[in-house]
Amino acid sequence: MSLTLASNPPLRLHWHWAWLTPLVLFMAVMAGTSIGETSIPMDTIFKVLANQLWGAGYAVDRIDAGIVWNYRLSRAILAGCCGAGLALAGVVLQALLRNPLADPFLMGISAGASTGAVAVTIAGLGAGAVTLSLGAFAGAGLAFGLVVLLAHAAGSGTGGGRGTQAAGAIILAGIAGSQLFNALTAFIIARSASAEQARGIMFWLMGNLSGVRWDDVRLGLPAAFAGLLVCLWHRRALDAFTFGADSAASLGIPVRRVRGMLIASMALVTAVMVSMVGAIGFVGLVIPHAMRFIVGSRHTRLVPASALAGAVFLIGADIISRIIVPGQVLPIGVVTALVGAPAFAVILIRGSRVR
Amino acid sequence: MRLSADHIDWTVHGHRLLDGVSLAVEPGETFGLIGPNGSGKTTLLRVLAGLRKPKRGRVLIDDHPMYAMPQRDIARTIAFVEQQAETLDRIVVREAVALGRTPFLTALQPWSEHDDAIVSRALHDVGMAHLAERLWHTLSGGERQRVHIARALAQQPRILLLDEPTNHLDIRHQLSILQLVRQLPVTVVIALHDLNQAMGCDRIGVMDGGRLVDLGEPEQVLSAERLYRTFGVQVDFLVDPADRRPVMRFRNAL
Ligand SMILES: Nc1ncnc2c1ncn2[C@@H]1O[C@H](COP(=O)(O)OP(=O)(O)O)[C@@H](O)[C@H]1O
Ligand SMILES: [Mg+2]
Figure (cartoon, rainbow over the protein chains, first blue to last red):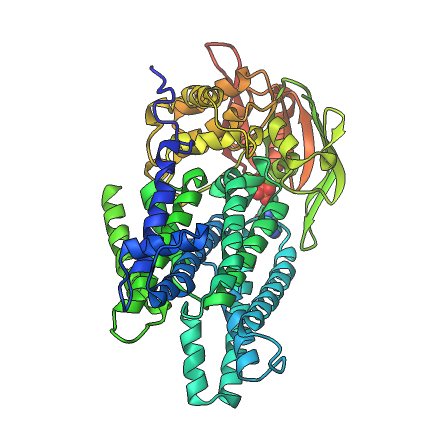
């Protein structure tokens, strides 16, 4: 019998596609910068970029230049970072916990972030010295820490701490932690928020990119890249979890250490993103599944594909959130859900036919 | 390589699932593990594979205690075929087998032709080469089992642990897998529930209630008395006219 030797080696990065990545990202960011309430032509954008980056000195309308550089460009780049970061967190959690419903907010991060945000803005914690972002980040960290402690306590009682029970314990602890922090948020809002404040918080929770400046990009871009590098570095470990944690261990993965490190770093990436732009749902759940249908479930390809798709998806969602209702900006989370849910349905149906 | 267990205890929730198990499997030997359901075969194999840390006692690979070895070094030496391991991932057979190369690859070391050749060889050895591009969830139980075995072979282990590997296989593949395993120049520990198949091992150990109650060559261990005491069945020994070797036939104990 002939051995089908390497006709289609399944585990290589297809580098001849890699050049598309910067191109697609660049086009998405350009679209995000150009499209909006006032649309700005491409040549203006390029001139502003040239002026800012190497002082080309083109004559550009001051207002246009301000919109491009100070608002839209930073916003589009951060949207891309958030999309990539959240999608990667989803890939990792789904792979490690062997649960298709796992998403970046599973570990109580969005619930904790919202508690932190309302504690700062409504309950007045920190007496004005603490920003909303910092409060949200602290809340996310606190919630994550609590969930980890709970998962640890629940997982260590079941004997096989690294086995499937541990994954189950993490998911249950995440649910418990999220419920607790959601209740705290509701409590604070009910106690002391005005209707106006409550609406503001709602808006923030559904994701809001309108306040984004370059400072945020300086945090979000390294976070997204660090997340991508961590995932790529551990791509084979993520693959090794295909048949569960025990199988990963028998393939030489130090399961506890690798799983702990990956979950913690993805939690950090998620917390950074959420503290800047709120808890944008759907990206982390849907993008990884969509990409599995397209590039397969091996992480050598799934990781870069999900990061790219997450970035493009969120930049697109941000554009839609700005233009769909004239004169009004929708929370981006609404758009990700409205666009994402039907898209996901189509992928599921077509995917089942391909089988 | 020599694999030995030294007075191993393993407990969970106060239940002692392994109780002072000691054995030594010599290099190249095929060691059969038999015992009724729930007697601790799977638990013992997991401890031997380094997936569970014994509460007392230790496992040695040659003379190295396993607890001092990094997980990756263990995986380069020992491959373990679990009784059942499933996935919902959409992966093809070849990708599942390729996982066996994990302990030999690092983040910076790319997949090579050499790895491809090993994977193809492993697929061929278990008779799955023609299904290399099939999706996992379209395989039958026996085909999945053979893929798991191929994955273990792709690890090129010097010690191979198999937990009831013939369970879902048709008779032809049962025989060919057993023959393959016996021919491999590696140390093998194999849990079996077909006692006639266990006859083909070099030595066998009998587990009962978490203890290793007997250990030796198949003809000595598989006595009528042992089978009555451990499995609660009557046995008659017939003689295979082809090779004059004993064949067991079982009846309910009176
Ligand atoms: N994690 C666990 N918690 C409690 N009991 C267990 C656990 N794992 C195995 N057991 C029990 O230990 C006994 C031995 O199991 P096992 O080693 O799988 O037996 P075998 O493979 O010989 O059928 C069984 O009674 C089983 O129910
Ligand atoms: Mg068993």
